[in-house]
Image 1 (cartoon, rainbow, N blue to C red):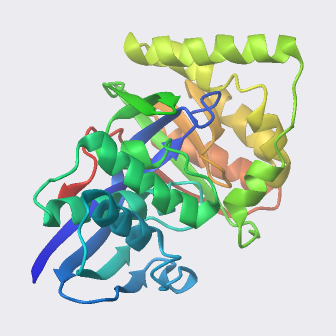
Image 2: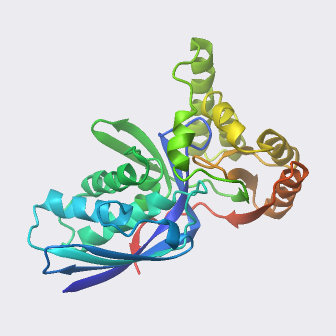
Length: 312
């Protein structure tokens, strides 16, 4: 029996206008996964930690196990089972890439146990299968930064092609988690509310915002990147209806000095990119504004991390 313990970080997907195409890894929190490769005809997984009781321990429904099993299948390994203990540090259903972290950890651990048989891209494709099991869509904007670290741009899906960008420097990330009632299939719902079609002028405006985001990151210009983050014309307006007080919270963040603000992944958390040292004051303003809307919330401060999944 071979055993390894790995961890994978929380992430923020979309970054405003980069729906399914952009995501970044955070320095905390992280999921931890202990995985063993054993001579067995079946798989077994236990889940504990934050929200662990809400996550399926059925091997064919758990994102960590599905991603890990995809690695074994891709590598052509038969006659072996996986035994796992998943310790959740990334809160589920809050927009911080919880299933993405679990998927990344599962795929990374399985590939490590096989001696690194698969390439980085192959491991990513297997991790995306974990996302498919968790929310019905094999998107990579959470799982790619959780696996690879840094800020990731997904350049193409078929076949998958990604680019890792350097994290912005001189900034903090404020994450504000509101206490709102969530549907069990929160991510599926957040996708279902998106418009089926949009006007051409809206697409043009969205492309401009995405260009600002991408160029701001590549030039290490937080102000430019923040302008792009705040300029989502398609996804944010549709999902804002699911987060009471969101528009006022975003306005408060920008007035308090944030470079940019938007919904964190599928929500309901909201994030702001702020100058280093201003995180607390921006976070407090955002919490106060949520309170004015009758919603309790709390904020946390993070850095953009170059570190993705790793052996503990």
